[in-house]
Length: 134
Picture 1 (cartoon, one colour):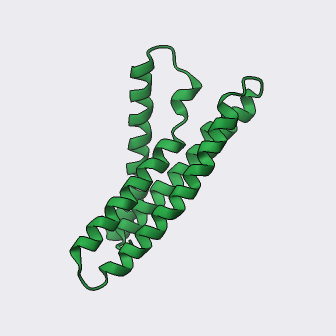
Picture 2 (tube, one colour; picture 1 turned 90 degrees about the vertical axis):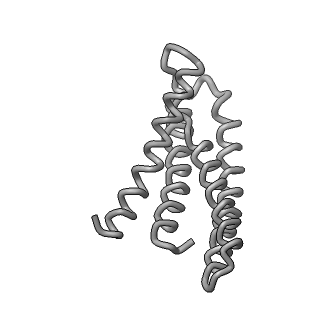
Picture 3 (cartoon, one colour; picture 1 turned 90 degrees about the horizontal axis):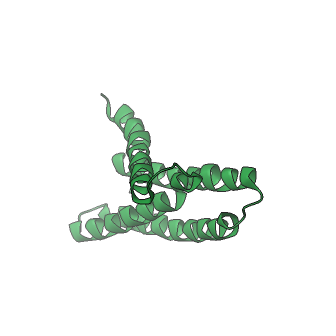
């Protein structure tokens, strides 16, 4: 497997595994039956992305090698972006989770849009990390 194909494979497989793990754990905690809220994983993925970016900044700053400072700055910028996106996701969840009338809109905003945002953040971080860009 080439480095390029490994980068693409990990970009999608690692976040995908975290999504499945989070869904299964939430279902085990709540018990049967399956509920729509078990699939609201966007915020969890954003928090994972924030944690990964923050840890990456610390590790890169400790390395103190040539070129690591630039990568640490890019990781810090990524972490700041994730914070703003996370605040947006929280407001979306606050607004839509309490809405019991508009189930189609709720499903779209929380199961699709929020999850895609979180998946994009994690996927972007993993992809850039594997390619040594951050």
